[in-house]
Image (cartoon, rainbow, N blue to C red; front, side):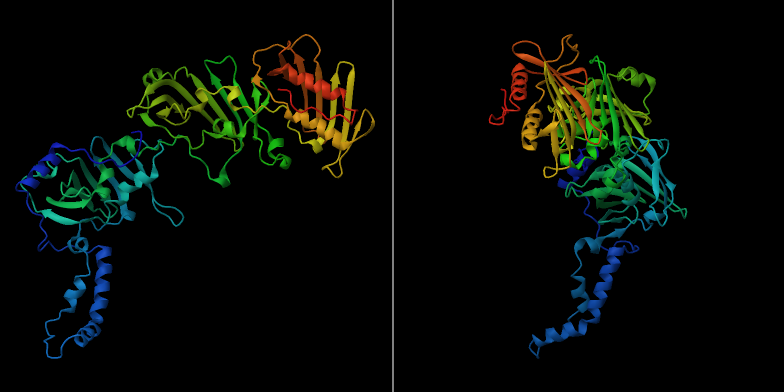
Length: 535
């Protein structure tokens, strides 16, 4: 089931039969002289309130007498009747069907489209609630919320009213062939049995329920989940998302895909993540393969961390066989995603063939290593199956904060600019050029242009030119954590290549290289401003 909702129940032959009798000769609900039953907690609470009113009855009579003519007879005033009128009809007619507490439940046998047993795996303690599971599926993650409704909804169950005692015709209530039959076994040896029938034609919020041969109306919301099939109770969350306190660092993500000649490999960049100077705007991961590049934080987070909290569009198969996996294309996965975390856990998600779910959604068959479920992940959520490196990378080439620069060595033909900087901020930062004192602001503006340089297109599967680069920039940070070389090669009159640490990485317009050469040439001419654009 792709979506765990509570849709309106479809009409069955039984529910239609009930509808027919509603317009003909359906037996009227029996509400007079119901059999004595033990009282629910809500009813007991109301009776206590009524008792308090009775105690105050004298005061109530006194008030009434003050508003009556002294000659009128007040002996007929019944305070208990007045208080009883404060009860709503539901509480007046409520019938306790099961007085056993959910805390004492041992197991539940359910028979609907499937036949399965829910049992207590561990008892309640001071620190934790009781844990329940489904027999034969202990290794499968459950939706704890939905499973708990089976335990709680029919414990301490009250009916809204008795409809008919020992009816001869159960079909008009949808109970000749019940939608579900349930037996609840409690720790003290008590059993509670009930059958779920059709929704009432008079009120969809009520459902017919048979207990001990009698037919009652019970709230539909309490009966709905007993009609659900087995798969409904398995969790569609493929990998739980940890809370903030326990969220691990995703140290690496590798994507292997049949339609790519290379892997997409990302690593957590501890230096960037711990660098306060970037102001949290940079992604904490960088692309390492097929080329080095910075990542766009908004575009890459689903790729690096999206496995946490990932949900399936549907559960295709529980305990899939080898044949099931082969049919799904998972004997030779189209895409394999490996996520390694700093807590020692590694998760492997495999995507197979695409198919259409029962809800009409295009999805990939998928498995998570260690979980014996065949999932269907919506195409829109299976982001690793289609991502390209250029979809998630940042166009930035240089990212080092200006006051963090220790060395900036630039070579352009015969020209060389060797800058050495020291300091932590503009007020105390000093810089030299080729061993001589240099104006700090002039240096800052020159480097500002380098920060503006961006890759226009990833340059994959390219070879480095045999010629020397037109411009070579080697940058080292003061703490030594950043040390990289960016080389610019003009490839013709219109295009150029940027290589990072000797690996072709980006294409860019040759006008960018021309502008950089111009700024190098005029560096010492303080009367001329640097050019910042090249488009």
